[in-house]
Image 1 (cartoon, one colour):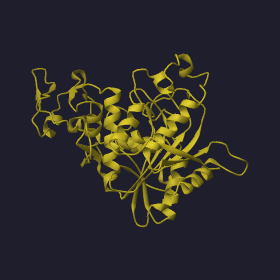
Image 2: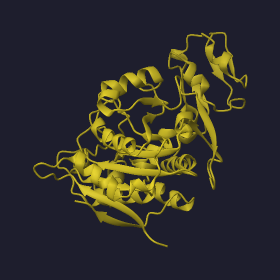
Image 3: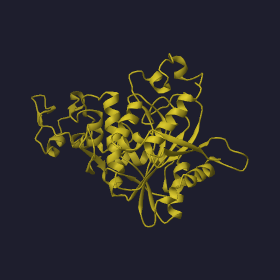
Amino acid sequence: MDKSKVYFTNMRCKMGDSLLKKLERLITKAEIDKIEFEHKYTAIKIHFGEPGNLAFLRPNFSKVVADHVKRNGGLPFLTDCNTLYVGRRNNAIVHMDAAFENGYTPISTGVQNIIADGLKGMDDIEVPVVGGEYCKTARIGRAIMDADILISLNHFKGHEVASFGGAIKNVGMGSGSRAGKMLMHNDGKPEVRAKNCTGCRQCAKICAQGAISYGADKKAYIDPEKCAGCGRCIGICHYHAIVNRTSSSSVKLNCKMAEYAKAVLDGRPHFHISVVNQVSPYCDCHGENDAAIIPDIGMFASFDPVALDKACLDAANAAPVVATSVLAEVAQTHGDHFVDVHPTTDGISQIIHAEKIGLGSGDYTLITVD
């Protein structure tokens, strides 16, 4: 079996050149045009960045990809799903505000933003996971599944639970609705944070399982035996009183993310781009970013998201440590920069499980593009 092809270009630019021109050459050389874009809805899966974090991808990168799709007759849009945690992207209104604040507007990118799982994170589709061991179905944002083609454009960086975040995380976790994110992070059973509960009873009205009741203190209680883990109570609560109960281990979370990514990508054309710059130790979901742990490396592209993540991981781990970063402050004993920063994580489990379920291959050939 042939190795997957991963294309790479570094961050160096001669006079008269630019990173945006290099990105265009990269995706062209990586044969993105093998995809038939004419009249096809094309979801460009992006992370708009949590306001306050400045390590997220600049919108200029997404404009290059969107313009390329449009020149080939496609109908591109930028998309992400709402977050499960409390922040500036947990419903479509504040999510769009955050995207605009970070420069993702139709003026700057030339395309529209669509929050894939709707206003409150409840507009999803249950999609089969072929070969799934942890998830037999996945709850995916409707607009992502409505698209004919998916392009993943991600910022490669560290993560405190997944170890690192690349194409698999961008597609898997990022495409999950709030219910989907619950199922990946834990067993899908929320609980009530009593101090925030106002007793408004909106969560009980929307619960189809009758799992929510109220005590003498007028605070909500969720019966885990009745709860189906749909996440609608989290979406309806305006007071952030309903939250995740427990978290999955790093390995289990990574395996579930890989299975969600497979559900999203099965049966339709897809292409993946990773930008390895400003490699912060934490996810872009944080409202801040620590100093980069390694120097900027470059941009990678492939039809295989697993090969792409493995190539980015290998390049990152081969890079020197930035002396002023948190990585320089910890013991570097694991042979993996991201595990050194987050010792309880197991990032390679993303690659291993993704290969096991047929999402792609970690065996790749790296092709350099000037």
